[in-house]
Structures are given as C-alpha cells and as structure tokens.
Image (cartoon, one colour):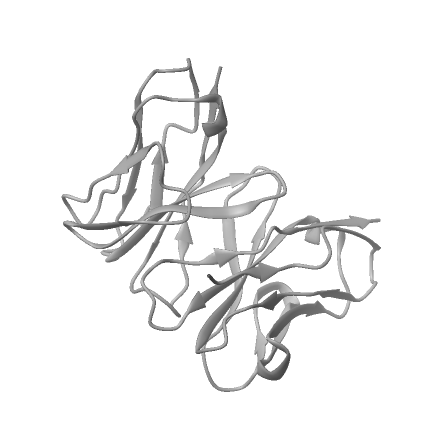
Length: 114
Length: 113
C-alpha cells in the first residue's frame, strides 16, 4: 500500500526564516502529489499540486515544491516565512490511475514566532 | 457557490447511538470521499465514491456506511457509535479522481462518550 512520510512533526521558526518540509512517498509508479495547509480550526486548503511537467511547482502564498522522482520526494519550501504561516501542513499522494483517494502524511505542525 | 457543505459542525453521541453526517457539494463533482483526522495520524480515507450509485471502502471503513443516490450528496452513517470514532470528519470532492485536487468541507467534530 502507498505510504507518505513527513519527517518533521513539529517545526518552530522565526519570521523571515527559510522553510523546507520534507515529504517522501513509497509508490514507484505514476503519482500525483499535493501539499495542503490547515490553519487552526479550519479545513484543508490546497497549497500546490504536481501531476506532470516542470518538477518545480509554485503554489499560493509564496510556497513552492520540488518533485524529485529518483528520491521519491516532494519537499515544500518557502524562502521567507511569516507569522501567518503558522498551521498544519500535509503532504498527500494519489497513485496514478487509482480510484481510492489520497494518502496523507501525518502532518507537520509549523509555528512561526514573531 | 457554496463548495462542500458539511453538517453538523459539532456532535456529541453516546456509545451505541447512530447518526448520519451530511455532505453536499454544488460543483457537479463526480468524486466524493470521507476522511477522518486524528492527532498525529493525518487524514485517513473511510469511504469514497466515483459517481452516483458507486461506493467503495477506503483504509478505515469499519463502523461506517455510505451511499450515493445523487451526484450532490454523500452521507456518512455511523451504525453504532464507539469512543474510537471520536474524531474530526472531513468530506472532500473532486471533478475527477487524481490530479485536479480535492475541495474539502469545513469538517464535523464528533465526540462519542
């Protein structure tokens, strides 16, 4: 079965610091990759997605992610974080061709200190 | 355009009670799914549907039933609530399975006592 690993469960950064959150998946075939953000008390919102083409994907709010097929990775980055980026971040994978939805990582709780 | 609407937002049940969590979308999405979110576990797929009349089990289906009689609605039924079903439940929909991304509802926080 597909699995998704997010290496950092809790991350604390100061404002203006750079961010990189790791995500690795296990499926060796075609995949669609997603990063979602969940602000406190809210539902999940799509930050960005990758399904083909340029492996460097730009999303909303200045986030980007790079798909590295050889490493089965889809790491999320932001060059300068803001206090408003405090949230839970989830990496998710869909196995190409499958109908059984997304497999999520366990999430990374990001806290930005002013 | 309301997106994905879930009701109720909060619910407390006694062990053994049954209830239905409602999910409706107005985007004409074929694909709908239910997830539960537990601390430190991420989101886990309960059931999904690829169209009206078609449903299938996800990773954690035990104790839950679903049906899909219309494109718009995808209710989740708890047959006999247990404390282990205390969780936050999210409904999600998508135009198609795969790369288009999923739209999530605002969630139902369920406590079983």
